[in-house]
Length: 116
Image (tube, rainbow, N blue to C red; front, side):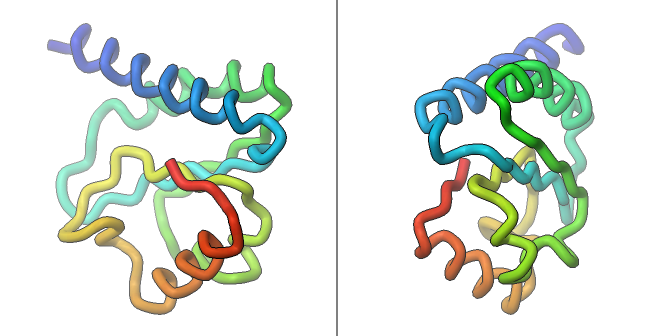
């Protein structure tokens, strides 16, 4: 089962890198958001590690956070071109953001930023 889980994680990482590659001019600073409010996926670390080399090869800077606090504010989001919701779990999408964080994220997205 571990092989299947790691293979699926690697495939997910490849898909994310392929998506970002097609938006090379836009994606320079990427935020990987991995917070969970329920089940924590055991492959998060492996999958995140799998995308690091391809991202660096394309000249992107990746930041990972397991918490939304301090990252989903207008000022902080302005530092990122793309947010990747990475193996999150919650009651809604994204279920782990409070109302202020959701509002900041929606404004950021409406300004033309990217979401994976």
